[in-house]
Length: 209
Image (cartoon, rainbow, N blue to C red; front, side, top):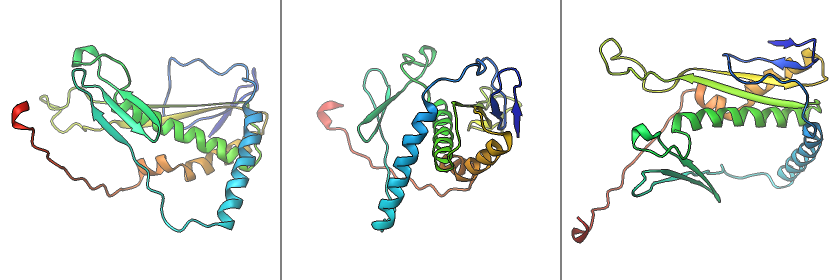
């Protein structure tokens, strides 16, 4: 569903959920519509390359996390990038980074934002500003009397998309529908998945015990 703010004339596309406490979009930030022109060129070049040299197998992606000594900080390594995940001080952390559930919400908001960019570039839809906010609930009372069956996972996940654009509302609605159908992380979270796991034990050397 799309609503329009007639005072500032942005088009606002709204998903599920609320996002109180965040500033409303007022004036477009320059540069996004110019970026989408470059994004479209890159997209078309990648598609042309894929036609000439079609992929022959799935791409394997990896993330690697190590619990660091003394601090317990979780350092996530993905290719040449690093993300720090940490706990607040009251849970033996230093608050050096977000927790895993928060990172998951960030991943969803990032993916939705990127698919909006890709889709807008493909269809030459002008966007002046784009923001995606994701919320969820975690039940801290889980395991206590009356909350024995509370979910361990974040739940009641909702997202809200804010778009500033000169495009008509029906075109932004169509953009929204395409994004919801094409976003891989949204699909990951909403479709059943098969996840396998294993464990490798390395005995501690006797002189280090």
